Image (cartoon, rainbow, N blue to C red; front, side, top):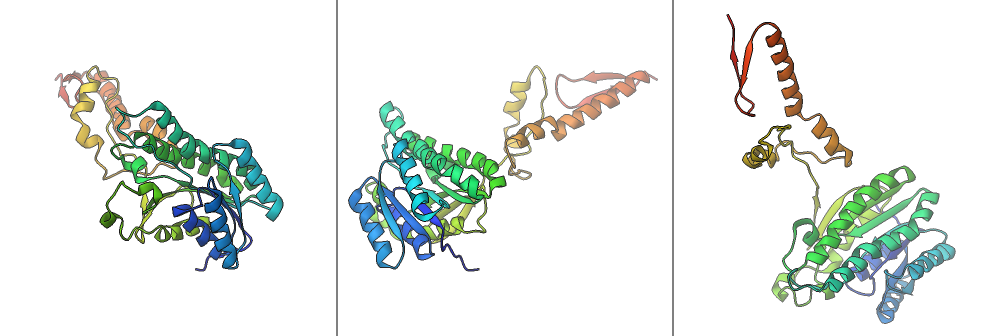
Length: 325
C-alpha cells in the first residue's frame, strides 16, 4: 500500500544531521513539508536546502527544544505558513554518559531536559492544533537503553523510558481526536554513537535504514501505542507486558510466599499487554487465585455449617478436611 504524505506538515527536531536528517529527507520524499529543527544553523540550513533541491518544501528553524517560547514560535510559524501541523518527530537529544556513581546531577538533569522535556515542549505546542484538526501523528524517540538498560547511561535510560510512559498516555488521550502516538527505538551509527562502539560494530547501521519506520508511523493508517524497534534494515516491536502472577492475599507470610513464587510470578506463558494502567488493578482485583480462594472460603463456610472441621496448614493453599462423622 502506497504512503502519501502530500500536504502534511512535519516538524523534525534534531534534524541537522544523523537520524533527524534522514527522517526529514524521508518524510519530504513522501510529500511532507518539513520544518528542519536544530541548534546548528549550518546543519539545519543544509538539510532544508537538500530537501528543496530534491523538489520538496522545507524551512530551517534554529532553536533548542528546551526553549519553550522558541518552540511555540516554531509551531505557530509552521501553522501560519502551511496551515497545519500534522507530524511531530521528537528526535533531538544529547549524551552525558558516565556510571551513576560518577555522574554529576547537572548532567543527569540536562539529558532529562533535552530528551524528555524537549519532547514534551514540542508535542505540547503542537497538541492543540492536532486536536482542533482531528488529526496528528507524534513520534517519540526511545531507545534500547531505556527499554532494557545500558551500562553508563542511567540518565539517558531514564529519559528514554519516560518517553514510553508519555507515549502510552498520550496515545489514549489523543485517540478520540485522531492523534496517533508511537515510539521509535533506533539502532544507528550517528554523531551520538561516535566513540561508543567500534567501526565494525556500527557497519551496516546507517540512519537511512531507520527512517522508513518514521514514514510508516507518520502515515494515515499508522498504528498507535506502538514501540517500533529499527536498525540495519530490520524492524521489531517491543511490548510492556504483565504476567498472570500469583495471589497470596493478606497472609502473615506474604513476603515469604512472594519470595518462593518468583518462577510463577515471572512465568510469561499467559502474559498480556494491558490496554491501560487500569488493567493492572482490574487483574489484581479479579485475580484467578483470589477468586479461587474466595470460592474455597465459600465452600469452607458451607462445610462448617454441615459440621465439618477445617484445618489450615499455615497460610498455604492446601486445606485438610477432617470430617466429623
